[in-house]
Image 1 (cartoon, rainbow over the protein chains, first blue to last red):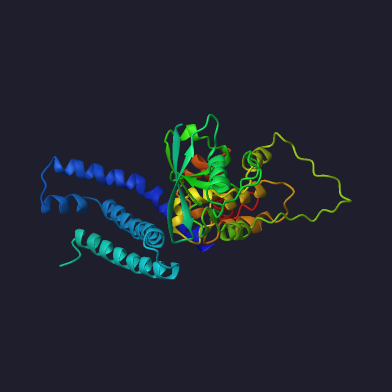
Image 2: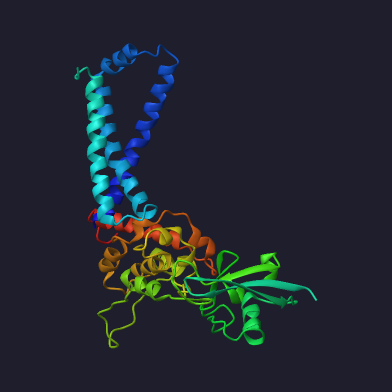
Length: 112
Length: 237
């Protein structure tokens, strides 16, 4: 049952991230054609609370999705036992989530 | 007379290729070549076959890197006069061209593949509409004869020792679509377990390699869908 739940979770996060990646990439394309400075990036992100919500959700999705994919790669290509792969991906989940949320927090001007 | 250069695996997991020379004939399969070598050149070569005509599936071997039924592989189709013949991949090698298929058959059982019914001989035969969606799905998968070619062709089997493999999951798919099978949920549960359908990358090697053109990839996709429905509480998915 765990395997199917993780399978579903990874597909679900992928489906949610697909439009998010497009929005993210479109924003990058837009940004590189305008003024590309730290100040302008901060101003844009802080212009709407929705962007903070957007990137928080994005970070959570990535933190779930990426370790699940890496878990399979560790088992199939790395020949790791499932318990070891589970542990590593759990650590990666915490690291990705921590780093991502800290990044979003910094964009909102929250971190010194 | 034109000759073929045949390299045959000798030994078990450790071993080497032995090269033989066989006259090229008008009409000749890989199995004919192996038989000719075994009967006329080296009687110590071990290999498996039974029917010789593509019914039993026991003569499957790796020919020029690909898993094939040797009885149904004509020399001409290979377009090469140098031919390497090895046992099926993803299985331990016993001797020469004979692979140990026991784990392949064990996994067949682990995928929840025992048919179960609470009916007796006194009950009327089940009425099954051959045109129903369910029966058509079962029919598409049911001709598998367990030769192991798809299992040998599958990258995920090679990578993940626990993966049940295309043949076992294909069988599970035909079983969950059999209206007479009364332990459908058990079969789904087994097929969606740790080594189950979720491991499939849908690369389709099994489908490409299957000598009778079945698509275990399609069957596994069906199981994935069914396992998700089952997870979300739709028991008759």
